[in-house]
Amino acid sequence: MRPGDPTELELAGQVIELVRRLGGPAAQAEAVVTRADLALTRFANSAIHQNVAESTVGIRLRVHVDGRTAAGSGSVVTADGLRTLVERTLAAARLCPPDPGWPGLAPPTPAPLAPPVDEATAHAEPDQRADRVRAFVAAAGGLSTAGYCRTAHRSSAFANSAGHTAHGRFVEAAMDGIARQGGADGVARRCADRLSDIDGAELGGHAAAKAQAAADPIELPPGRYEVVFEPAAVADLLQNLSWYGFNGKRYAERQSFAEPGADQFDRAVTLVDDPLGASGLPFDAEGTGRRALTLVEAGTTRAVAHDRRTAAEAGAESTGHAVAGGATWGPMARNLRLSGAAAGPASAVGRSTTGTAAGAVVDSDTAALIAGVRRGLLVTDLWYTRVLDPKSLVVTGLTRNGVWLVEDGTVVRAVRDLRFTESYPRALGPGAVLGLGARPVRQPDRVDGAWWAAPPVRLASWHFTGGASG
Image 1: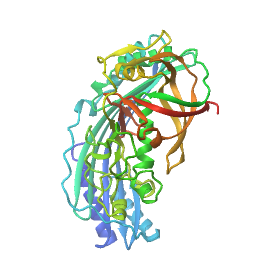
Image 2 (image 1 turned 30 degrees about the vertical axis):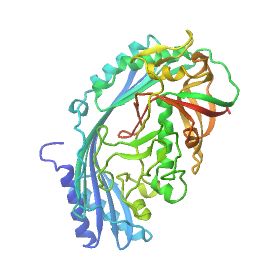
Image 3 (image 1 turned 180 degrees about the vertical axis):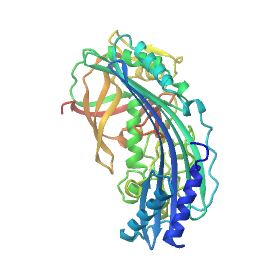
Image 4 (image 1 turned 90 degrees about the horizontal axis):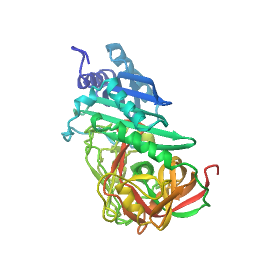
């Protein structure tokens, strides 16, 4: 921001004042202004091929006038640009159908304190990201590598016509890379509040070891197998549980499996949405303060996420999970952390190689879970997952970036990718979780600000329905 430029809060206030002047005293409005500094260093064929950075200001406006609601967005912060945004959004509201479910605006309330941001990450230079890419490539030992290292800094302010205001900042650093040998890929990902916590050499070495261990895979017949999921695979479970299960809109529409008060999960499972457990904004898209929300406690479903609209329908209070476009998508928990009792005695922190020379290199947390498997599969990652039945959350998808057969606690050899069809709640249901690792690992989402933290998980049964081709 240049000296003399209006702050985010000042801009939000200007937008609200324009709504009052142009829409009349009965118009209700809320505005969010965000300054974003986003940077991405991408690499392929073991060389950086793109370094991009953008600094933008975005404005989101929602108005409710004459019983109708509309939303608009813009990026022109001049007087004319703000006026155009307000006029356009008010005009859209007049064309919208009546909105009898309008929940009103968030009243003036103090926002919770957010963790301080790391200024070094907020103002990271391209060479700092390049250093981590260089370390990743070097640690891969000559294997072909690809991926990215990114940093994000957002400063956001909220204001509404009820007099409520809020302001906050967040930063994030993330790295996601693969190493490839022949047709085998290994992956390593990490998300952190500080770029200094991203170790490119550690991630590159891990990805390379996985790729080398994935050579010469065998075919396995479809069926139900005991599995150990690494954190990257568990992240997909958490994301789909959040979007489809703990979503207050889907719950109200009876399209969610969630039954608050019921023992729907194994007692080892505790799920908490923890937006301020890392550097995050202290308020949601409606200005409601964000706090930790326990969704599952020792196997018992405790809550679903609400914004103001779904909370009003349920006779509850918003949990601070409103998102842009929430009228369509519903409220979302985007910072889920899975925790539980450690599975057996954990060995010292570090890596251990399990099994033969073809075995997968895993961390000690994962190795402790593998040790108890008589016959099953070690799964690195899931992808291309699609929901077949939202009510029971039956999902189909594929494994990728490494699958290995485990026999008598030993990784025997690599397995070709498999297709699965499985109900995620059932797979985590009572008696189905045979162990959780002790250390959650934060996995980056496609969008900065969202992350999924989980340890490796050992599950009694997972339904594989065929090979990757069908």
